Length: 99
Image (tube, rainbow, N blue to C red; front, side, top):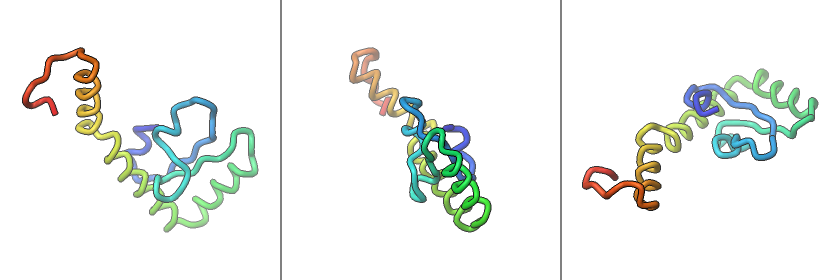
């Protein structure tokens, strides 16, 4: 899902229990994706239909998702988060250029 979010395309997922998708994709235009209930074919069809019928909206949705992925999951961001985790848990010694 993270790799898919790095592209300017809208994302669509089912709301699955404890699957980690919620960490990457939230429902709505600001997050760049749509989440539909699991086992709800009508909701899935409706979401797909909207993406296919409204290309401008789908483009905006995809661009928003791409921005969000850059802000939250770029190598620099993830690297800083990992460094902070390692420091906070005493797994590495602090270094001047670490953060």
